[in-house]
Image (cartoon, rainbow, N blue to C red; front, side):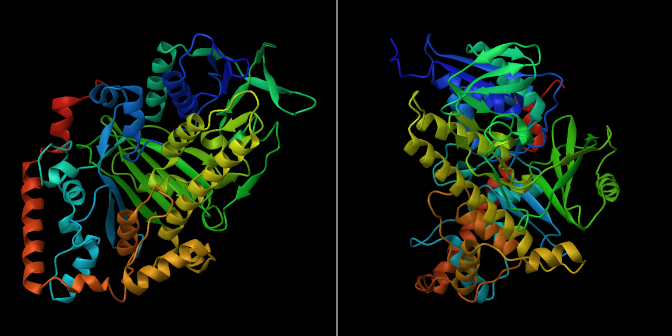
Length: 503
């Protein structure tokens, strides 16, 4: 028997990826006959669906739900992802991969790259990529799940997925409904608030139907039907440091085996993504409309495709930033309703996932403790700000010479938190992970090094190892990485054997 203070009715406004992920997570972990979860969505309202690329943390969510990976991959038309290739970001003609796995092996309590910098000063010319299995496999078009082999690079493989966001939402919907979530078709036109507290008590559908609840989760996209249109929460605009504000998207035909990584190619006023699925390719051009027209942006997208377009380009407007309160009164905003970080590092779905986990950790009762709400908002803001700084890094550290947009990004005033990281790295190659932030030292190193930053020195303790021993260790690592790569099947062979889609 639940207490009178327990929340017994949860209403989710909006479907799509955010709504159905929330429904699935809540249904999986809050199971009680007195607690009901109802999701309201309208088939007449489309979803953005740009979040087709993910990062490895999504495997934690899938395990939480008890999903079988091969079935999941097959039903969402998915492929595997080992990292992101950035083309022309430092300067036109250069490229690098931000991998999911570590470089080399940490030695003497220090990150591998300190020893690599020293090895370079000794006259060795092997690329840092030669010590990263994810990069080697991505370049070779290979994939393998991690193997239980002691002291083998094959045991360290980290990966994520590319999938069809609409199919993923449908997959989550099936899971949720099978777990007891009630779906109601309809368009929300009004929210009714308590006249004294301002808490939302019910929402009205276009049909006139009233749906009451105690906890409301706003997954209505950029509109923010509850968090903004009803509660007037406010929005903090980060366009001054992440100036892209539009995207044009299109699907293209499959013409070759899918690559096991996302490709991001810098353009005149933004960048273009290429996300390979089993039966097609997702493409999009993210840009700032102060430097390029919508028509020119669409032309740039179409001219940059690797295969013929299979539909008409679709325009999406957005503003990068965060609601001033993601949790306000008894409304929690998830996905685009809460904030938006452009898809440069595939964080959109991850931010939904962490918000769900944070909600479950801080799940309220009907008293809605303000201290609990404040803590939730504080941690959400910190997570967004840390990701924001990482995204800014890609734009700010560039040597492109093709005009306005990139000049602005190079000269714009960046947060002091990012300035400090850059100073420390350029000084002595030190990198630090703060507050268990999403992107750790490997990620920051990959982008800083890939964008052309070279530190003046490295950790002095890397000099303790004798030259001959360092030479031998580096050679042993290269041999181990090469042998591991040679044992891996191609990405397409792996898919054919385990999880080929019928789509």
